[in-house]
Length: 320
Image (tube, rainbow, N blue to C red; front, top):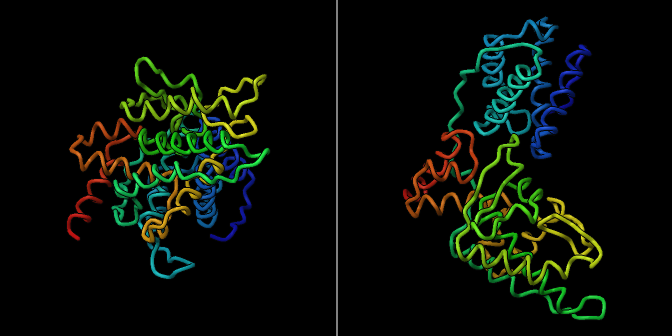
């Protein structure tokens, strides 16, 4: 989407205010960036229809705008907008109306626009065998031993890679949730991981099975101290070799490096991201018979509809 020029300064202000609201609530960087940009399209549409004050907005006009989006052509690829892209706009509209209500700017009734049915084949997942291979690849760390890169440092990084797989696959955390995870968020005695900064600042507790607990304990007690300076106190769960909290991009890069070590052509060709691990655990839990409601709570979904896509994915896989 090209940059849309708004004439109305109040709309410019609302877009920035909405962005700050999302940021304060702890949404992922991509969400904080993209959702206000989608709302800018709404503002542009309003201006083109001589609606120049937010107080003139109502659910009828929002639905008219959404129908306009559905009929709009895809500027890059031709044809209409994909259902997945339309759902991103819907997410922006729902969140923006929440923002208007919670900030006291205006009160709109709840939107009742149905989400578009997405093609489950668009969701990338890994097989159980591919997940096992990624775990095995953590043990094949590079033995480029030197006085500056001793063996124990590589072993610590390998253990951290295994912990990354455990948090994002075994526990199904989102990228931002894993980035903000602290040492104190793991309750070892209760075998529970506390997600304090979930989407929209929603908290949840994720159970740890024996295998996941073992990998996390090995990293925290046997190897994480190697990555920390003796005189430095860092609460972050994932720390770099410079004793600092790993940013989300660095964590994602470790997953890519694991993938590149594989000799499996199919695995190398997949677009593996941290969220793919989350999609994978949801699919595997459903395959193993876990009820959809429990998977929804496990993932921290705000509604069951968000989880139902995995049911469609399994149906498509079974039809192949």
